[in-house]
Amino acid sequence: MVPRMATAASTPDRLSSYNPATHDLVGTVPIDGPAEVDAAVARARVAAERWGALSFEARGEELTAFRKALAAHADELADLLHRENGKPELEALVEIMMALGHVQHATACAQAALAPRKVSAGMLANFRATISYHPLGVIGVIGPWNYPLFTPMGSIAYALAAGNAVVWKPSELTPLIAVKIAEIAAGAFALPDLLQVVTGAGATGAALARAAIDKIAFTGSAATGRRVMIAAAERLTPVLLELGGKDPMIVADDADLTKAAEACVFGALTNAGQACISVERVYVAAAVHDRFVDEVVKQVRALKVGGDDGQLGAMTSTSQVAIVKDHLEDAIAKGAKVLTGGPGAISGSYIQPTVLTEVDHRMKVMTDETFGPVIPIKRVGSLDEAVRLANDSRYGLGSAVFAGKGARALAARLRAGMTSINAVMSFAGIPALPFGGVGDSGFGRIHGDEGIREFTRIKSTAEQVLALPVNMMSFRQPKEAPGRLRQMIKQLYGDGVVAKAGDWVRKLRS
Ligand code: NDP
Image (cartoon, rainbow, N blue to C red; front, side):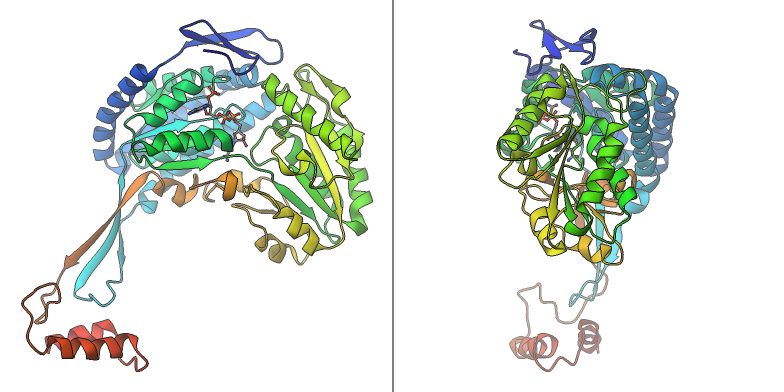
């Protein structure tokens, strides 16, 4: 196996995880091949049958024990996140808190989200029609390295709460945090093998996508998402894809500029810009552009990169540093102006936050996912232009709008799975809101009731509760049946709609 990144390396049967800031070895994990993956899936199948048969209350108790065990290990988990991913301790603790919020929410809401629903039976009014939700069985979860706990937990917690077992393949850059979570799960759940981790590089993920699982929840790049979908197609395994983004932020001339700048700086630079819902490009009304840029630059200059008290940590992978550098050089070659940072301010795994102006959509920094601490700001002549440019993207994950009275109308015009108004990224912290995108940002939803239902199969049941003298689902029909049907068609669906299906049932019974 060839390591994809400089921070991960391996011997033939072990994968090593390195601290991206210090290059110290954090630990090693096995490289699981198809045989190990298939065995884990088979064990998960046994666990899923027993787990899926439990009541919501019984599952809720165990999920609560799992959440409490995770909370009890918060310091250890934060330390691992810091060492494997490079993020500062504070950001690691925020990630843990958000992940635990989702475990709690999924536990609390599963029963209501999956309660059977009675729906109208329409013209078959002598039927009782219900929709019910049932666990799928075994869910494969493939996660990225940028939020190695929060992001996969957005699938894992909801899949478990819906009654499934999970086999999780973490990124090769951050496997140890996943191994620790599986260890905590093994201690918290009475059933063995409910949450298992398989480790390795892309090939292990590919084996999981091809395994006999019931759904795959993938979070990562659009390129890998396509490969996962192709592999899953072999068994027609359904896929949920949470992919990249190029999230726009719009600042209108009646926005609170100081707050907008503060949110922009955080939204673009938290986790060193390595977030799928990072602010990746900013469109600012011409009237306030210069003041907004001044405020952003002032706030960026006050930040510290690296060290125990730094707000920005090390980039997790050297290949991501190369992508950021390439985007900056491309932008500069095409006329962008560098106000802070720049390609010359990259040192090893550390990138000084970079503010660019005079940017346009010929530049990669405005169209491709940069995934680094870069804030490209574009002046726009009107909000229509801002919306047109914001929507000019193959991605459609998150977005943000800062405006006064027109903010909601502006937000509604953005082609994105999620929009924050007068805030950034806030939708990710509200567990009841479904999370996901459109276009190259993927499809399907994690979080919220939709995120629980993603991990179920829907069953429709039609129960005949009344026998009618005329039964249309029989070959034994009276000879006046065609005449009655003609009349029904006209009355139910034609111009002269006079009756409802229920009235017809009553008429037929009389
Ligand atoms: P990648 O697509 O490179 O990898 C994602 C996962 O897929 C990793 O575990 C990786 O393993 C695995 N993988 C690699 N090749 C294959 C394969 N052929 N079959 C199955 N699995 C495979 O993404 P990154 O880890 O670089 O994550 C960054 C990306 O994730 C960004 O685009 C970001 O926007 C997106 N993201 C999206 C989020 C969302 O919710 N929409 C949230 C967070 C990130 P390995 O690392 O071992 O190669």
